[in-house]
Image (cartoon, rainbow, N blue to C red):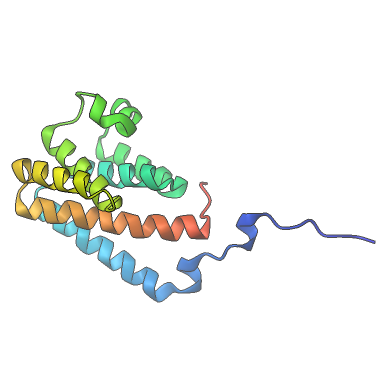
Length: 158
């Protein structure tokens, strides 16, 4: 009598991006539009990748952390700053613009904390333009969506 091993949790998952490609392609198009919006708002690629990484840290998305760490390094980010990103508030290595963007991205990711959300938004108004605020929020919304796709699909880190 032979028995097959029970598949692990990842084996039972479907990759929702492959199972339902139309919504995933729409998400990719949204991502491209958001990237353009960020560039037009004078948010450089490093700021966008810092947002992508911080949101992915909060959400615990290993796949997106891998992808966006490599993208940040390609954009010129340093390993030193990447290493302290999770504790960005406790360092002096991030600019006021980056700090405002990170706080606003965190507030977008965890909207249930209304006090923190209001504080982040107020601080962002002091540093970021209206276009930059909008772009930061869109970057955070988009990476949150990608995080959920990858987390629920259990996309592997290669």
